[in-house]
Length: 113
Ligand SMILES: [Zn+2]
Image (cartoon, rainbow, N blue to C red):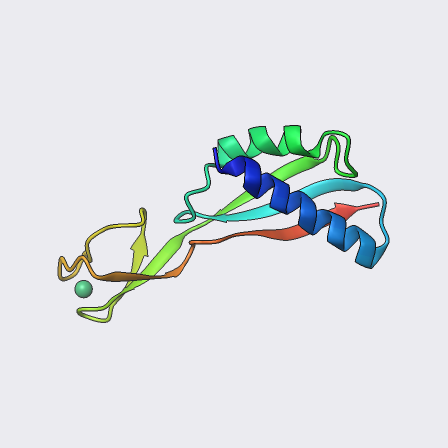
């Protein structure tokens, strides 16, 4: 389950910001997960809770914002919404779609005290 190592990198980001901004506890973590990022929100929730145990984010609430995937068709140049990583252009049926957004996961916000 690659969500486990992603949750660990989230913890790393939290620890780095805690050092930079001098906070002790994290109440809420807001994660933005792109629909094309191959990150399962449910799996992420599960891993989040176990990775954050006994850290400064123990018991923190995880909020997940799912962002839509978009791409550009390399054949006809249209911007299209993408529901999965590989698909066909709805306008010209070309399989050559280049992802332009929605393939990343990032920490959008931390509520700290
Ligand atoms: Zn097209």
